Image 1 (cartoon, rainbow, N blue to C red):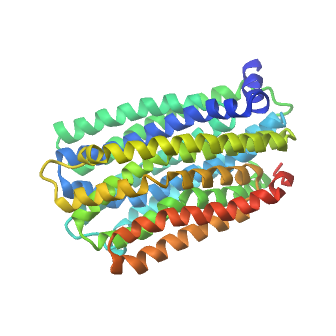
Image 2: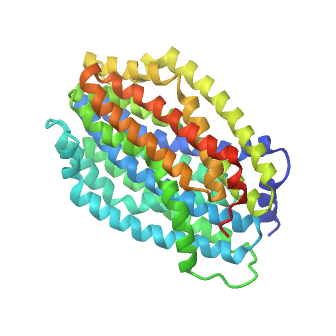
Image 3: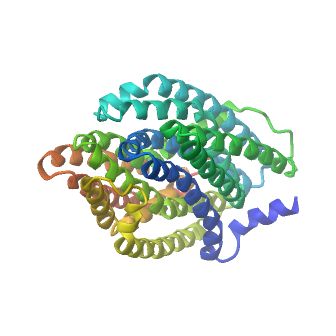
Length: 451
């Protein structure tokens, strides 16, 4: 019990900047490893199978990312209630909130998996996926959706570990699953020659093992909290409360991936070579935004625990510390992309890759590298509002971001080329941040309560 109390108090006392950094660091590293093993699929098929295989996995990636972000957003939304109960030292209700979230998202994941398995070809066709890669893309998605419940449960469990202030546990599990996934990728693609199917099977196996281990660890940790009464297995009131927070959180986390999916049809129209380069660039972007999104998620947990303990002024200090962290991350990322973009794209494409693929990937990285600070400050500001349970404005801001990105890409790409897709991204991030920041400045979030 002593260990849990100390973990909780680390979020409520001490220097906010130092506390936030050391809490966010395992989340950043963990998410980087998660993106790394997602990226490994593209790198391995691109190097050992070819450009069309890379394009097929890339076409699938936009759709799978939507489901990943639904899981992450749902976990973060559900964890707000858990964090606030932890800050208020109401351990029985804290446990009930965790059990309720796990049951809900297990049911949701099974339904989404069934829908995705049955409809993925129709979705890819609607997105104008090139004919020469659509069969491989469908095969990848069919295998992937069979393992979707494991992916969902792992991400929900990771969010609960973070809500309890134990962000090092998901990091360790992600390192394990990442290394396992890469080893299985290489074996199934190089040795067994299973090509696109091999990387999909490897991902499902790695995620399934991680989810089962995570569940066992969580149950052991919860036994250490001495609750004032026996926790209920399910609570409808918590379902309603959690849904009000989880839905906007899902929207917020999914905006980037939904935008990618809806913009995919625009990029697909330029052919599989451009799609291959764009897919490589998007994989790198997904890694670059990790520290930004993870810092925002850390700010969300920091906010929830401190508001639960009645410390709104400490939340503001944590927010400012988060913005400082974002500035440092943005500078480092920009320098790396401007200097090494060519070598990075080369890692995804075989030596005989098309010129259009190389040019598209390099152009995208050198452009977007200047703008990652925008998604960082947006994520931190949204994190405060989400942690407070003040979700309506930031959900609206994220929807504006999505609408602008999709509209701009569809209207301007036929006129100005695929580069119009790039420009929509930072402008959407900027508008999103301004709307959320204006609401943050009103201070109304500090008077919200969800427990």
